[in-house]
Structures are given as C-alpha cells and as structure tokens.
Image (cartoon, rainbow, N blue to C red; front, side):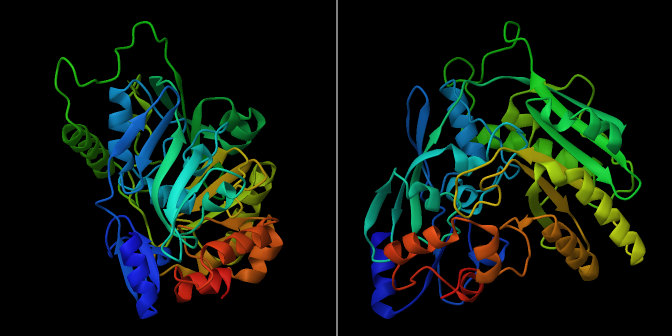
Length: 394
C-alpha cells in the first residue's frame, strides 16, 4: 500500500481504495484514476480479551466466524456480511442495536497509509476523523475493534400499528430491533431479538472437535441469505413474507443481516430519534399530496449517538430510514430526501444524495475539524475524485 500510494504521488494520480473491486456499488468507491484494490489485505491478526486487531480487507462474515472460534463477537452486526471491515468503518455502516453505535463506533485504534505514503497509527482524538472517514484520509490497513461475549438471540416478528410501536417505544425495548412501515397506512411489521438463556445454548463453533472452516461458515450464511431473499423478493407486496420461522434462534451474525441486496436507488437518511413519528407522517402526507406511491415499506432502525466527525449519527441518538425506490421513481427519492432533510436528517454515505460542503458545515459541528485532519493527512488530495470533491470540497 505504501508503494502504491507513493507511486501514485509521483505520477500525480489520485487514489480511491476499495475492498472488493471496481464493481463495488456506490460513488465513493468509483474513480476515473487509480482504484486501489485492498481485497487481499485480509486476516485477523490478534484476538485479546476484549479487542480484535483485523486487517481492513477482511470480510465481515469471515471476521464474525473467526471471532466465534475465539469465543468473542462484536456489539453490532452490520447488514452487509460481504463488506470489508475497512469499508464498513469508513462508510459508517450500522446495524439494528438501539443502544449501540455502528461498526465505526467500535474502533479503538486504526492504522492507515496517508497521502504522503506514510504509515500512521491513530488512537487519540483524531480517531474520530478516521471513524467514517469516507476514504478521504488514507488507505485503512488495519483496525482494532472492541469485542463482546457472544449471545445467542431469539428473534420475533409481529404485525403492529405504527402508533403502537411508537407509544410502546418498541424500537428501544430490545437488544436488536427494526420495523418495516407501510407509509402512509401506518401498518408495521415489527422485528426484535433478545438474548436467550445462556445455559442451554450450545457454544459458538470452534476449531476443535467438528471442523468448521471459515469457507463453510460463509457458504452456509450465504445459503440462508439466498433462501430468505427468494421468499422475500425486493418488490413484494404488503405484507412482506415472514423473515424468520417462529422460535428462530441463532448467533447474531447468522440471523440478523438483511437478506435484501444493496440498491443504488435507495434513499437512506439518519434523523434525530425523537423526530421519527413526525417524519414518517410527513413523508406519507407529502407523497400522497403529490400522487407518489411508496411501493416498498420504509425500513426503520435506531442507533446510539456517535463521535465520528462525519458519521450521520454524530452527536445524537438516531433513527435510520431506508426507502427503496425504483429507478423510475426519482421524484419519490428526491421528495423523501427533502422531507427527511427538513427533519434535521443527514444522508447515509452509502446512498444517493446531493449534499456538498455547505450542507456539511451546517449539519456536522465537527466538519471543520475533519477538514483540519484531512489537510494534515492528505495535503495534496491524493485521496479524492470528483464525487468526493463535490461532498467535501477541494
């Protein structure tokens, strides 16, 4: 990585790191210059009592499998098991644990190659810039994450009304929660999960005894995701088919990831948690007034406030709203963005949006500090491209 960045500097080229290949979706991992494939930068370096040091190109599914062999896990399970650790940290990918932050919030130290081709180990105040750094500070090569003891979960889902869910504060009442909300009818499919009694639960899979390879774990998880997706196609009518059978239990990384694929037309926003009910009602009213139809339910989750300077959950408990639209529904995507921005929303960095430096300066109190760190780490703007320049400025 050091050599690649230095040679790019000698040629005056810009660099965008990716963990999968040029086919990874999303504008933040596309470039017209040098795309640096970090997918071979894999492996867990060390697992201690409450930490794991992992290379940034490791896939989340593989990391969870290896942590299970050591009797550890992570406090949050992001939706994208195929994403790399570095990508999930850099983009602020979250899960559904209402009392936890995203994977970025679990980072206690990081190592990266900066714009001069120098290796930096970050563990102080500047770590908040690296958390959700959008790839603008350097190439992440390794991160140290906080770990927790694994707990098997029992998952549930139930048809409810939005008013009931909000009145009962259901989204905060369990270890993991999410809701699919039919807007504007107010019908809800509520899902939640809580730890089961640890005594009768089997131990996590380990290397000794019956051999469970990482490849086998990944293949089994992928098979489950494909099976769920086949029974729950992206454009199913309401109500959606059940995601789990009654009484389903499993380790969080097995049962929680969303089986639906990433969608380039998704509008995804992070709003203050207390604004959730009003924002959903306004979204329904605005769509109805304009004759637009929300054909898919709005996926809602909660997350804790974060310290990452550009993380959408910075400084506030957050409700995440994911709105899947067809490519032909650009007016609906833009309307959703306008309504949620008016609710003090910030766009998720994995979704389409039109934000730039002016919006960042208003919505993110730490934007100026992030730019200061960026000037230090990448003064020559080695890690930029037209899209990132549109967001952060030159």
